[in-house]
Length: 337
Image 1 (cartoon, rainbow, N blue to C red):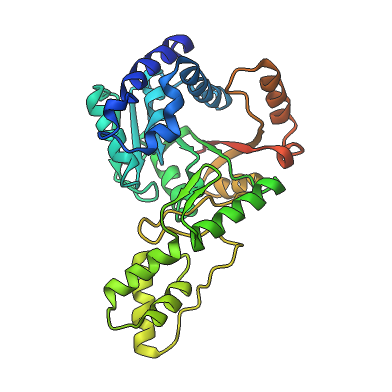
Image 2: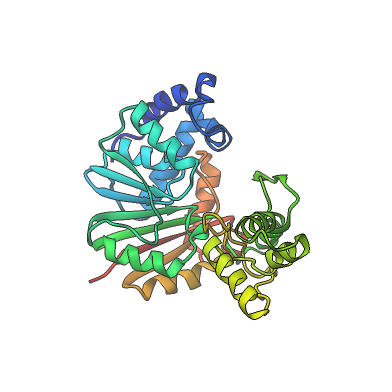
């Protein structure tokens, strides 16, 4: 791997410029909320260490490799992998705000090659089979609409011996974290709008569904629209329109009423909101697609504190006993065959 300090300094040089106040009209405002810490060298050291730790866990050296960042968002991890010497890094995302910012940064800082950004779902991609040495899903698999479709695509796209590396904070084995996540689901589904513990509800999903129904079926009165919006939870726009059309033809109301046992779905993008996973079950699910998978508890350590890093090393070694207290999990899956 490239020297850690060199990569951190180069990352800082990029983000120190990108996060200047003069760029607030150029990039999406959430870039500052999610990655404002990268304007400082300590923040870049932490973010770079996070990626190095992932690669070491997977026994993967990015230098000279072709990598897919599935659900890349603003592309910070893809940029780090590029600085680490990857031959190509392809970031894909369906965000209408984050991906354009990543594309603009690639252009502004002349990061292509090796970086490329594509507006595409990680569940359906146009790359040829066996194109990638590694697929990274960082805090993204919990947002995929169809996890099995993503896993099938990952199996198709990875070379034999390639690595699927998953890092996610939605650990269902941790009871406090799971309870908090279900509260988050309820807030995004029903509102009210506004900030919630690091997230921002711009518009509750039930209101978004009502707007979709009202626009497509203006003949419906307000009470009908609200009831249909309530009964089309977890549906995408196309599914909502089909369900309402069926109701108009048959008189039978759709019956997808929200209950906080399944995470809600953004009806416009199809993105799922923070799906919870049991890491061991997810590892077994991955293996059905032709992988050998291992899961690990993650307790932190990217900040560099030696005691925290030691605790994390022990916590990973003692998985699954430590999953109950882990704020996150990792899965390393190697493509067989």
